[in-house]
Image 1 (cartoon, one colour):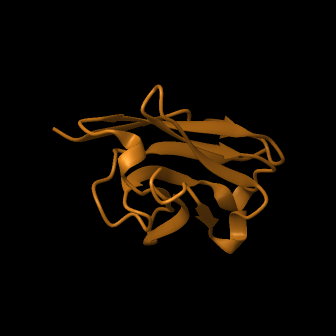
Image 2 (image 1 turned 90 degrees about the vertical axis):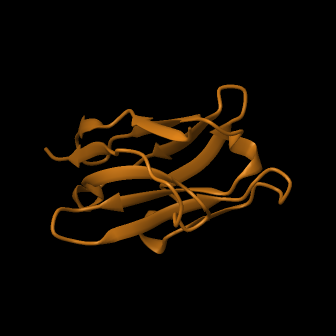
Image 3 (image 1 turned 30 degrees about the vertical axis):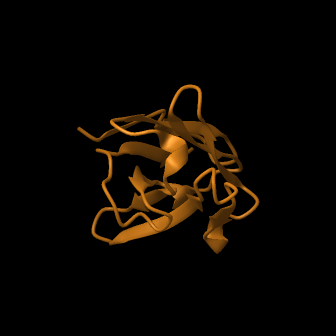
Length: 118
């Protein structure tokens, strides 16, 4: 069965960095578009970043609020989706999910909490 397991969240000070990982089980990561989403309590899911499958070239896109700060990538050897986050801001605080699909319309993991606070 398909399984997505996020890790790497935690507490970080503003301006700091974190790396989120999403271990994918049940399919080969490079054959599907993937994405990262986030959700603040009481608000809807927000799309953060997407990456195309390998055959399509692996291009990436980001929501405007994270451009230049976040980087989505794949480690195909480990079948793991990655989100590198830098220059973190308090407004980046959320539960982060990896998802199947460029806009995250497919299956999602259970999420990992990221808290940016001094």
